[in-house]
Length: 258
Image (tube, rainbow, N blue to C red; front, side, top):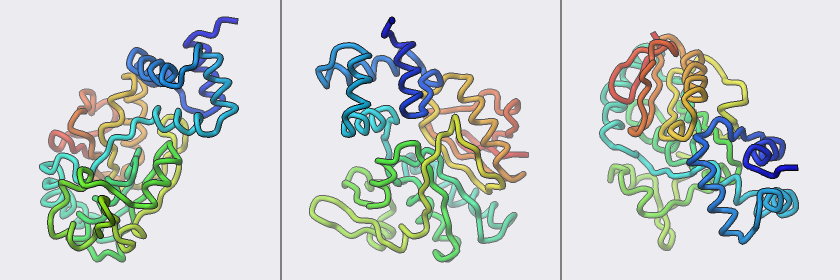
């Protein structure tokens, strides 16, 4: 038996349902090898054994694999476009009960930012954000809603004052924002997508995917949007073949289903 990276990918899929073939191999293999070395384990076979036997190592691995780097109001210029153009346009088209999905939401910074941003246009009690991630650990963190100063640095001051409480060196987001978000586990490459969204937000995640996996996800996003619905992507991304996947380009980081 050859315990190489090809073998390891199959074992990981059997254990986690995460398909490593969808990630850029060089980048992902380097990350995994670093983690294995950090754990002072020799060989993929011994590491797989450790993942099966040790719950902490398994959770550390999934957490490491799903690359959780997040912050509130990341790239504030894009959030200004959202506030000044996208939300007013969507409310005009669909009314106040917008159906919004924050995909690969990490520790909750993004869906909570969406609630706060939308609350300037719509009463809080009418807001419901669907938020999903592959990693149940980060979903658990998101539900706790405790963040460091750096994470909330870009939150507008009035919202920071209104919706955060300082607890030691950390900041706790208020329950009234928390209860506007529903969190679920979801695998973008494997699970079914819900339909008829007014907006889908998925930012700085697909950069780690292969071109084929990216195309598949963007196609599914396009099909999941209402006609006239928006896809909001990250500042490190662009959809070169947006027409082919079923979208029109509205501005640098906003695409619309025609």
